[in-house]
Amino acid sequence: PLVVGVLALQGDVREHLRAIGGDGVTTLPVRRPGELAAVDALVIPGGESTTMSNLAIAFDLLDPLRERIAAGMPTYGSCAGMIMLADTVLDGRPDQRSFGGIDMVVRRNAFGRQVDSFESTVEFADIGGEPFHAVFIRAPWVESVGPQVRVLARVAGGPADGRIVAVRQGNLLATAFHPELTGDLRVHRHFVQMARAARAARTH
Ligand code: GLN
Image (cartoon, rainbow, N blue to C red; front, side):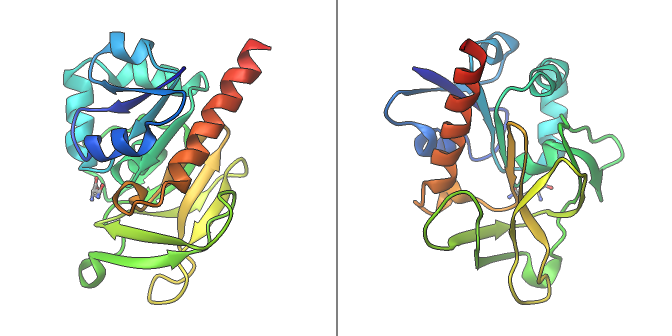
């Protein structure tokens, strides 16, 4: 089976483990370098990116994670996880680090106080079917992307109209919102397909 880890330093780990598990997928919470070495793909959950950064350093995971991501490990980051996958973070703490991998600039807590948390329907390329019901919780947005990055979803309507909230670059996928909270598993299934395709490409 495909082994998909969920980075379990902090955040809504259990919801992602539940959403990603299924036929032919073994899930594994990842807290140590040895566990990271055992996974084919990784989900970085929502939570608090400053805390995740501190804990990644304390658990000796920052460099191993950077290396695996740079080497092409399929990785999906949601909300704080999106921040951790960004090459550049705006409005972060000065000592905050990211794993990087996606050539994008994200702004933390970008939607501001009045719309701290909100729900909205977005058109999501690649997952098929109906628009996606997106839950945003003190979410970042993507301020700009490099040429290798494909934009998958934008906010439609309201003060943040047009802001980028889902992207893909190679084997890396990131959403500013939380599909693990809605029961709509299309994003997780899409990520598992990305991970299977990456494994197939490696072994043939
Ligand atoms: N505001 C959080 C951060 O900056 C992200 C919030 C979330 O993951 N729901 O890390």
